[in-house]
Length: 447
Image (cartoon, rainbow, N blue to C red; front, side, top):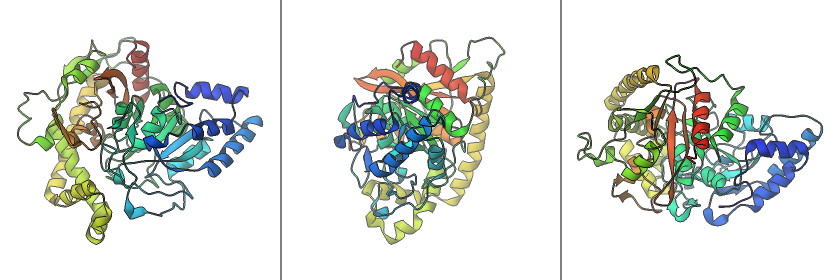
């Protein structure tokens, strides 16, 4: 913790660059100096390419060519996203030595916005996991406690921001992979609506659910980055009931310890640490409690994700299984046993759930719930007092990938001395409402 960019905002960095108090080359030098190798956030640094981009940004700004709020800003990119001329390893021995020939679409957008790409950040192997500790490159460590998980799969991107090495990073989110590490590391993570940021040049995990998202120190910085990549902000939508500023909020009840849905199918039925639930619930005193069948949605998610992930990896599993990390291979072999009829049924059930959520959002402006049901476990642990960690890590985040809605995780204080996150969800096109709500929480001292 405590790198150069800790506590610095994109707005403040932009003012410093335009006033001449800072330069893009100077900011890059600060970023490189702030890299903490022990955290293992980066798998590749690009001082030469980043240096050229920083010099160009300084020249353009001096000539009054201003590309917007990311111009000259150091940014990190997750290592399943192609950056031309740099390795894209996906955390796997399968892609050892692979170098990208072209930029991913989202990287092209970053470059057009004038951002300076510092390097590539560590990922859970093939982005197929939420812990961030399964990779040929070793585990990415949580800067709040280096013996604990950083969260995944955008683990390195979250840690690079949380440690103050960069103010902004790109990640991907298939079942929570931006929001999970954001919550574990005490920063903000935003998953836009499905398709808002293109996934071309991003190695797929599950095409139905894959999103590109952003991680930053605050929700406002996520907002700035998102709009720099996608266009001008839309107006904040009015409340659904037509009233003035008050917002109607639904609190989505996590599965209760005594829920009849939580039967012997433990892998499908994680539950929540009551202290985490209390800490986050206290931030929404006026929210009305609502329930959706989260264990059932988790099953829908897993069936679709497993089938689509195996489609991506079938040949590699058959021809070179030994090049996978053992937990990844185990998951893929299980995924390969998904019958076609179950996949088709899950796709139909997904539509039913989408209608259920749409009906909720006809009555509420946004939904609130914890980002994660637990605090960060120790690296390598697989189970705790509230259930097995693998499903727990996506149990509250994956529903919003299933329906492709925008979801934002923001810091919500600490439990057991570790960060926890609050998650806000709304309808597509109402993203500004999430940032408005996050700003209200910040003013109230939630972070």
